[in-house]
Amino acid sequence: MQRLWDISPQVSARSPVFPGDTPYSQSWSASISDSCPVNVSAITLSPHVGAHADAPLHYSRQGAAVGSLPLAPFLGPCRVIHALESGPLIQPWHLQAEMTGAPPRILVRTRRKACVDAWTDDFAAFAPETVDMLSALGVSLIGLDTPSIDPASSKSLDSHQAILRNDMRVLENLVLDDVAPGDYELIALPLALADADASPVRAVLRELASPPAPAPSS
Image 1 (spheres, helix red, strand yellow):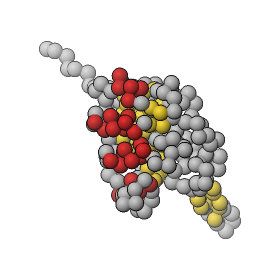
Image 2 (cartoon, rainbow, N blue to C red; image 1 turned 180 degrees about the horizontal axis):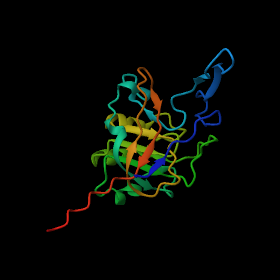
Image 3 (cartoon, rainbow, N blue to C red; image 1 turned 30 degrees about the vertical axis):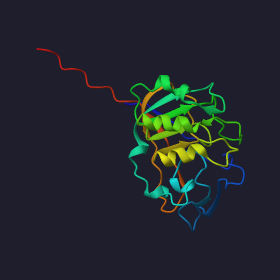
């Protein structure tokens, strides 16, 4: 059986969000009792809580909503690259040596331990020229283990504008603590939210299937 790595943080009221964004909350609209056979809850959250996929609508007035995005970029071979000493911006030279023969999906681990229960704006992001370099090499999706591909203080969102320009997709808030560098299959499908600017995903990596053994020669 192929091994799976769950690279999504648990989502709860403790999940960090950008200051001013809507945190996760949950209430119960029905509870199991003598007169009710089920528990039913209601949840409120920003679609950027936990592991999520941004849609172009997040960073462009005319951008597509997440429910209209093709699913192909979110499913298929990917490469995990460690850039633990990258500093505040992942530059092209942090990744170039690992790009030979790379698949069209690149996930970058920047933290030794993902921040899953406290907000911090001290996190690594992509330099926009790195996004352009990856696009030129055929990459269609990038992801990382921080809340944003741009620094928390950015107002121009240069790397988001780079993925818009290059028609790329992005995953944020992944948990790559236990994932070794190498190639995997990514499965991280967004929900079909018709008008939303992002969607939570349950992102997982699957061990690549071993090629069949060659038939014995006669």
